[in-house]
Image (cartoon, rainbow, N blue to C red; front, side, top):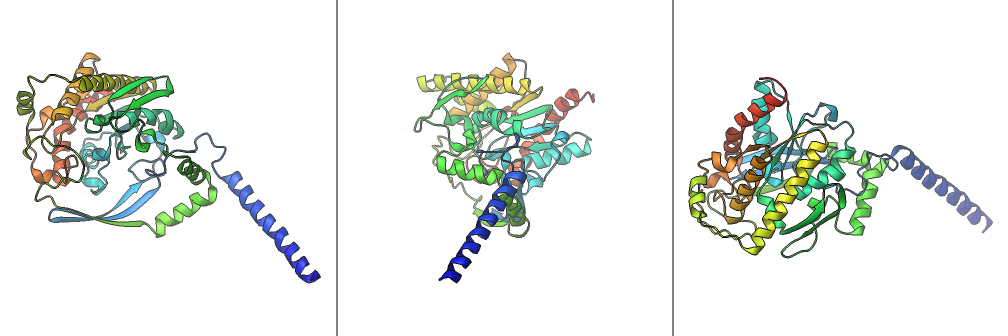
Amino acid sequence: MRKYRYFLKVFSINLFIFIFSIIFIDLLFGNWFNKYSWNYLLRSHKDKKIEYTVKLGTQTFEFEYVRNKYGFREKNFDPKDVEIVFLGGSTGNERFLPYELTIVGRLNSYFKKQNLPKIYNASVDGHSSVGFINSFYKWFPIIKGLKPKIYIIYLGINERYYLDFEGRANNPNDIFFKKKVKSYIPDFDLLIADNKKKQISNYIKNNSFFFQKGKIVQLKYFPEKVSNSFDTSRFNPKYNFVVDENVNFLNNLKVQEKFKNIVLSDIETLYLKSLNKRLEILTSLIKKNNGIPIYINQVLISGQNRTLYITNKTIQEYCEKNNLEFINLASKIKDMKINDFYDEFHTTDTGSQKISNEIKQDLEKIIMKVFNKI
């Protein structure tokens, strides 16, 4: 009995020393007291390496989808080297395409030939202007040395989520949104999980030294593997979204003709007021960080439905009123085929190529002007 107690005592002391050492090392080398820590922020768009096998129509792509430790869809980089940041939702992230075939990837291939700065892709699935705004409050400030000169804002489609808005640009806690169905901001736009349990989990994972080291091993030796297949030979929507057009791409002239006598509903009036306020706050935040915004609107498989038309028009009018750089993709792009999309919103490799081709020269002119290369 005495021998058993002695063994238990030695075991308990060693266990205590071991646990204390683990905690001490984690506190010493972790990010618990680092002002650049991610803390409670979502981990869903950082430290990712996924081996995708994606079939789009008759083509199959095998590639690594990477999001680095800063949350960008890029390999790791020095934030001090970043001069241009691209903000978008899933239509800018394009997770089901190899990087080089995405809009940003193709733009970078063109810019490299023109000796222009690289664009760094900070698009996050689901992000609207709400997510962009929160990025300036919660995400970008914790990336030490990040001071880009240009922010390319690719938006329009995801703005439909929000019907009301109240807030002030200088107070992130005074931002409040109402959705038609939900009365809260989704976690992807809030950048924080929607329940305490997930928030605590993210806090531990973001700060723990041992978890971070384990993540490095996991990314290097045990990447996630995902296979997806999309039938682009026919229109096969994946989302619960009401499409009020036939599946024929309507160019901007046809869209304008279709909606020339549009009368806004009360909800649409409220929505556009909200959108204007969000654009005002986003622009203010970019300028406060000594950046220049370049706004680009968007198109759907059908060109523009009613909501996207009034959204694109509002973005254009806001930029013209405030003398901001704006590329009217919805007006420029004349023809998109059904195989240029794999659902209502997201482009295949051919669709992304058409979009990058339409905007690359306008972007080049603006960027050359900003960097005094003209």
